Every structure is written in structure tokens, then in C-alpha cells.
Image (tube, rainbow, N blue to C red; front, side):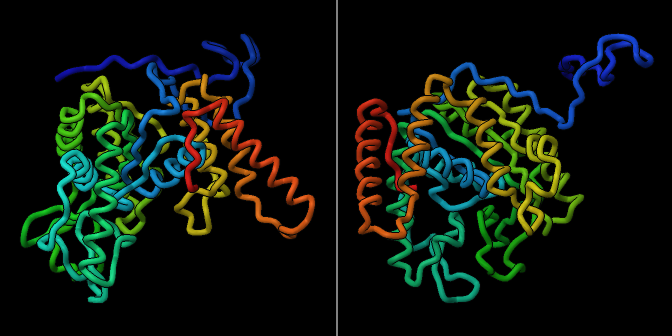
Amino acid sequence: MVWRRLASPPDPSPFGEGSGGGEGVIRPMLLQTQVNIKPLNQTIRYGDGLLFLGSCFADEVGGICRSMGFNAMVNPFGVLYNPFSIAGAIHRLGTGKPYTHEEVFRTGNDEFYCTFDHNTAFWRPSEAELLETVNRSLKEAHTHFLTAKWVMVSLGTSWMFRRTDTLEVVGNCHKLPSSRFDRLFCYAPQTVTVLSDILKANPDKHFIFTVSPLRHLKDGLHENQLSKAALLLAVDEVCQKFGNAHYFPAYEILLDELRDYRFYKEDMIHPTEQAVRYIWERFADFAINPSEKLAMKAAAELKQMLQHKPVFPESEAYKKFESQKEQKINALKRDFPEVMLNDN
């Protein structure tokens, strides 16, 4: 058995170590549990290729990166949750092998077509349209993946569904009968193996793993806790073994620093926009090079202008606003040529 030495926990007493009351140095009162995050030694720069994969949390943070002008691609297969499906997506991105007729099926409502590698956002009314859509997406994602320097993986759950006929783990059941699947739990050693395989296959890339803080209540509260625990154990072991694997504690930030239901939407599961923004700021401090702050500020200001919807588009004030916007776009291109003017 291998033992790993942990740092001594800080003294919880506000009066200092060994104090029995008012003696010793009084420390400031803490009203929030802070998650200490050590920034990466090697950090993200504008111009680096970024790929976000996994749960809808990857959509949230990846979407902000795109809006800030980073060269980021987000979930080219749609949202995925379990480690096997995410690893399978990374393998497919590496090979770029197109999808074929044999991988297409009709969804449970018998109205659409899809594959087991994609989520419901890819449903199409005909097989031809589906294959055209998924293969176009795959081609773009394959090209992006080959040059990407960073891969952010948001693991959602250890629970997964496996087809009873082929024993293939699926990313989504697409409303097919439950009798066609077995529900399985991916224990930590299995997750370690599957994540290790993708790290070995891509030693030139840095992987940032996070465990999605979104609870899967359909699994049950206790089962959800077991699921997250298995993921946390697996990611910790992988990050100890591989120098190109890193962990960002989004799970701990939402559950400890933002330990209040005001940071959740009405479903009491998904974080609010404010919470997502806070976690994004912690991620930026953790992973993005500090020298990019000026470019990020300029990109954020331009984004705000681009989102403006005029009430009176024919007014002189709006024409002046449009002129200022054009000046900001030109200044951004001139001063920060690595910043991309993405669609969102």
C-alpha cells in the first residue's frame, strides 16, 4: 500500500493555536469556506487551441471562453456525462473516422435518427441529414483536436448505460426501451484506466479534469454522492500519475464556497449565471496566463457592445454607437490579434 503525505490542516480556531479564549492573535472572521487553488505552472494563452468535453458544465465554462475570444470548441458530440463515453469521443476525435449507416438508429419516438455517441441535440428527421450533420461536426472537431493544446473534461456521473446486444456503453439512450440497456456503475479503478488511456494516447496535450457540481437527482441523492466520490478518487489518482493531467475544483467551489441555494436556479440543481461566472473567474485565475488580462478585458467590453440591441436603430445616438463599436473591433484586431471574434 502506498501512503501519500498530506499537508497539515490549518488551525480552525480564530484565536490561534493552543488558545483557550481571548489570548493569542485574533484572526479575521471568515464568512465563507475558501477553496485554495494553486495556479498551473503552464497556463493558457490566446492562440492555444481549447477543447471542452463532457457535462453541461463544460458548455457553460467553454461558452464563456468562446465569448472571450479564445480558440475554443465546445462539446462537438453534445453533452456527455460518463467517463467511457467521453473517452470514446476523444478517441473518435483522434481518428476522425466518419460515421456510417451501421451506427445510425431511429430514436425511441421513432421520428428522428441519431447515434449513440451524440446527445439529443443531434436528432435529425432523416438518416442522410444526420450523417451529414455529425460528419461535418466531426471533421471540424478532428481538425481542431489535432492542434489543440488544452482539453477540459467535465465528468458528470459514474453511472452509465450499456447496450445489452453489443455491450457498448452509450452516451445517451435516446428514449429507447430500458430493456435494451443495463445500468452500470463505473468504479474508480475503471475510470482511472479509461482516463489513463486517453492521457497516454495524447501526451502532447494538457488535460484539465473537473467533476461537475450538478447533482444527478434521478440517480438518487446517495447514489449521486457515490458517483461523485468515485469520479473524485479517479481524477485524483490520474493527476498524481500524469504530468499533463490537472484538476480544477469546480465541484468544491459550488458546494463549499457557494453553499447557498441563492446560487442555484429554480430546479435547485443547476447553478445560476452568477455562480457560473464566479466559477469561471476562479478558473481564469487557475488556468489562464495573467498577461492575457488586458486582452480579456477588451474582449469582454466588445462582447457587451455586440450584445446591445437598439431601441431606435435609425437614431443618431445608435449610429454613433455603431461607429464606436467598429473602432473597438479594429482596435482589438490591432492590439490583440490572437483574440477571435467568435459567434457567441
